Length: 129
Image (cartoon, rainbow, N blue to C red; front, side, top):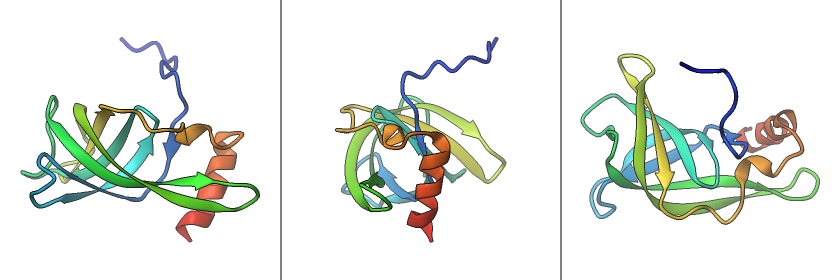
């Protein structure tokens, strides 16, 4: 039973940007769409097909995260992170949402770069335009 309280210890950065993943990074990579990220893990969507990860699977993901600077400035920081799939949920019959926990955390907290969720979303609009 869910009590409705947020149990995450860190705010997540919600954004839509490509993520590439594979069990063996020397094989063909599969593309997904980032949903949100924290220093310890991420969630992304992908096609509900034979390339979609499954719970408990180890895989490596390649993705970029906006790093906000003073004013309206930002850079994209790119990462390759191995991790373990902790959850896979059906969004619909074509798409699944995948949650991965990184083996090694990111060097910063992506969702805590802005003063508020609204501030982060405003800054992200500039990134995606």
